Image 1 (cartoon, rainbow, N blue to C red):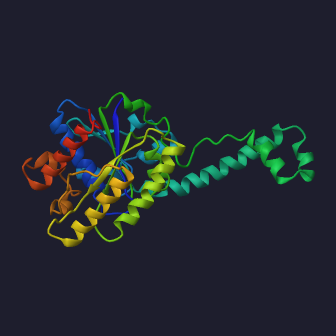
Image 2 (tube, rainbow, N blue to C red; image 1 turned 180 degrees about the horizontal axis):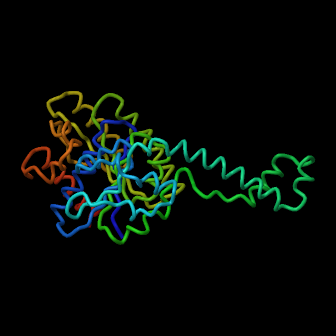
Image 3 (cartoon, helix red, strand yellow; image 1 turned 135 degrees about the vertical axis):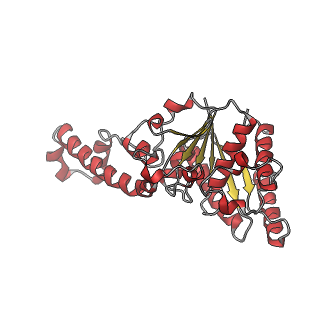
Length: 303
């Protein structure tokens, strides 16, 4: 089975796409025979565009996997050598709305069928308490999809094909991100060391723990990853020190790797390829992602 890793943060601009694509590139260089799948869960399509793929023109995407039960393997396209992508586009922006709409319709159908199925329910309903009615109905209604677990069993057809599956998630904690966390092995939380970072991480950890308790008991918080770091900035150093102390208190890993602020952040999602594929490993920005891989290997997250 593949090692499944997600990059997640509520906040936009925390290098989730940059980190997921550069981790994929670094893994390819480190393990040339490995097969890697990038799952693009963000409707902006930046993971695809990093590999010069226009996801806006693709018919079936992660939206169709989540809501229309299209097999994952049917949407996968090759991006570069042993790196494939399960693409997404702006359709993903409607996952929540379309799920609610469809779920509402299915619920009405289920109630209708239950009313016909339960003996004399229609006659008895006028004298029943609401709690009694709900008990009767709940016995018959089966939800076909879970809002927080839309990827349940959806990776079965690709799990054995790939060595690594890396998820790029949107800056939110609704259906898409929650469903991703419900199926991955590890979550990496990239954060920019700025004001309110600690508060944001605390909120995110609460939601991650909820998903772990409800859906994915084996979900591991691989660690907190500082990104866009300028070591010459006093604020960055102070925030990282604060978050490091917090992580130690909570017994959560804080990566030693620092992803530096770089012009590569401005170009990382432009057409082309990730820096870890095209740049020399000795480049400061690129080297940081290889340091991250070394840490992941050391902590036996990558084997």
